Image 1: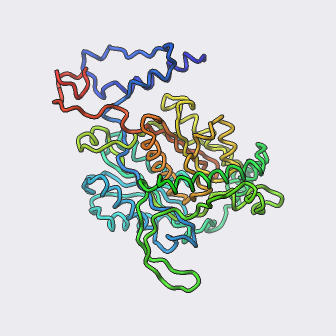
Image 2: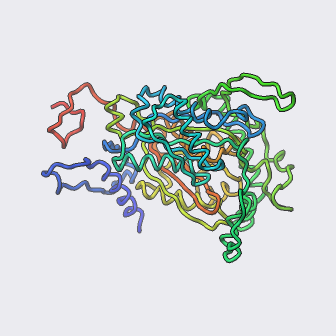
Image 3: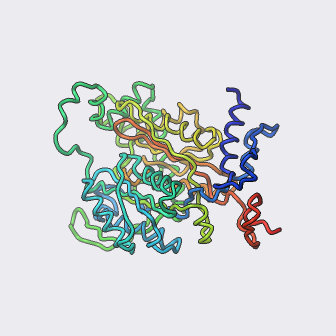
Length: 466
């Protein structure tokens, strides 16, 4: 397929978004045509899509992410973390909590039955009535993003018009350990055995199989810390963070203190590749994966409030972003870190775009080895990837991460204004998967004019006054 044909195909997908959900009979045979022009395929994107059944984000917030067992939120229960961000999105938008059709929470390490109950407690503590349902979802490191995708799909299907996709993880309490016995039948399958590999060994596998050097990994890790430090110093995270007032116990004196946690605490300002290069490998003798080039074990929560565009317009809520596509894929369990390199192209294609159309990538840095591989495999511009740092500096509270990265992405796109339009959130997934979602920045169409809506003129703009 040549360049122009591919461009026209992408345009056709985008133009299809312009069709009304129910076309009048007189328009059923009309055609929206995609065509190349001398300006290039990006010229088609100047005509912004604004379907009333688009799923949009009107609020995306997170707690600070702090170090497990040492950080400011180590003694804060998971239900308190989740309640804080649920209160935040309701307060920011002013919607009635009773209007929320469902609340889906990504979470990984806690016993599923207990965490489901904790999520119910959290929503009640946050002021939601008992008429609003809640459930959990676990697709490991992508659970928070899966929660958002599940809510988006339900809104698109018409099950409800408002929903919340969230994520929470309290890794101080819930460690990464296998619970119970292991099925002896896994000996019959090498890939089944690989599902049991420690994640650090899968990082070593990626580095060895694809030639990612220790120097490359430490360079990416240092860049992550330095970008995060610069972003924090510039106040870039303030709009997405909900401060959490909590009780913290001093690990040395056992003294309890009341404090308000308002910033991520895992960033190492001034980190250098040379300094990180002195750290020993921790998963394999002679290996290259260290504590310094791996994601941090962390505590945190995040929530994303979604609704149909029609609902947002009715309520007069500004649109932070539009959910455009989602993809979850499988890859070999022993090299699970390559998942984003497969999921990102698929999600981007489903959105009718190309990789060159994406302005910002929030790529979870589970390990520097796999993040480096994915960037190089896809030929991504490193300046577009994690411009405000990634999980190596900011932490990776497993079930929270997908929703957290969505909040970070959408606020970054908003700051850039017309300088950025599309963004991707992606991560690898333990046991051999990858996930990715494409979002479009809000404000993609002109704001409503002071004109009466013309119900009979369906072939005109909704705010046309004729």
